[in-house]
Image (cartoon, rainbow, N blue to C red; front, side, top):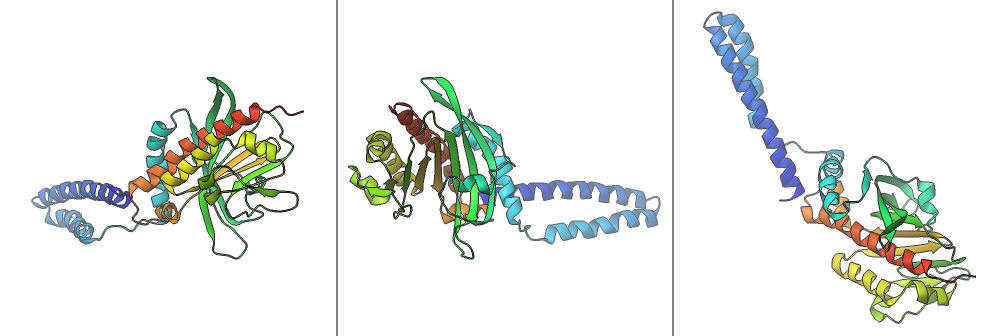
Length: 286
């Protein structure tokens, strides 16, 4: 069942309850009319008009906020409980634009919005060592341009300062200054992602075959791009969502599976953060 169909079903159930109540009141009015026809008709006639209007009315068109509200407040808790049972949700909390820009995924953005914060424990060998923050984020990429971004943003603090930058993106858009593009052994990975970094040795130790293969699998499975930004001791990741999830949050007829995948990919994003965190933790930085 699509989200739109689910909303229509709930609306129909609500209308049926109202109609039953109105039938009851009309019945009361008719009974009263046997004793006092004026009072009975005063009660019954307006109710009959209301009932006729409800029966003839078309399905209510839900605004975007109603549609998004069902996703955030009704569907999301159920999905997250299965996908990330250890997560703690704060649906109305988000990340500030200034904090998001510190990740350097973009230099600037407009129409920034964020909510549905999640805190997920970060564990190494079964022991909690830190936390991962996840957020829903939407914004316009550049000033004045209709280039919307929708996705998931995550961050954590690493155990070590790599004293450098490593960025995994697409189209080499992070190439500047002394940050260079590096060739990777995994050719499929290289076809999808560009790795920009100052220190080639660090790249090999952090972006291992396991990490690259995992990022490729996410791309193959969802057709969503995962980007990574490691700046000194800060690890940031984000998933670039597709237009379908944007349409879903704006009330389009999108199947439930689109929303499921939006939250399913969070679990894989958490796993990727664990991999990167562990690899940095193993580094011998003098």
